[in-house]
Image (cartoon, rainbow, N blue to C red; front, side, top):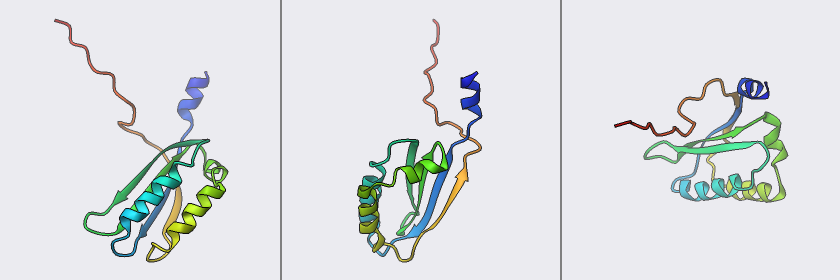
Length: 115
């Protein structure tokens, strides 16, 4: 029964859309990866997307629950965010979204063909 209830539980995605100062995306990426490496409880994965040929990006961080993100705000995380702040053109737009569909995220078992 608990497996069925786990199936019904949705994850949440924290989404930040922003633009970095010219030529600063690579530095921001390094700091993003460093910040994400501090996450533990409830963290389910992260993506950093870059619009080709620009310094615009979207960060997506997956959580079991919205509160998990706040639980993971450590002093190390705060320091990394402070270091990253000056790289933005302006503060990113952020929101939480409920994940309603996941397609193709599970590792697929290779098909065995009988001879």
